[in-house]
View 1 (cartoon, rainbow, N blue to C red):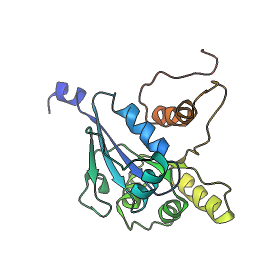
View 2: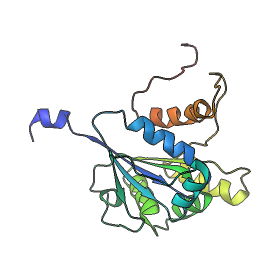
View 3: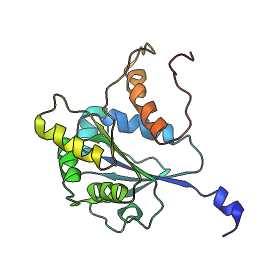
Length: 193
């Protein structure tokens, strides 16, 4: 392969949306990713994700044009295999049921299979959990994922940037997700603004 083609290869990221509350986090993340060049995004929604999206966002889910949507049980999706070059999976929001299945190696759908792939290949898995409070089972499952190399990124907004809208508040979490994907974004930086 020519060196120039190596330099212009698209980065590949997968996003899983589950039926946990917090669809706005996924919506805002997709909005930001739409403006980034040289990025390929694969998307999968759980069985309940569309219903929760419709309830919380107030409109049916429509995939942005820049993403490729895969069905919930499509094990032929590229990020279902370690031979693909997808570098990260963000599950946003990530339900505790999904966390439990990932923690115990139950790859019973495309989201949990992709998570298993990311962990076994030592790639980035980011679970954006929103549930609260957490019981002992949740905490143990989250610990197992963390010990296996996954990142637990709670959807816990910060306030030091003084957000004034729900979107600005949500973005304090979304910008952290983007940071951990090693993508560039203009955002509030502590001590810099």
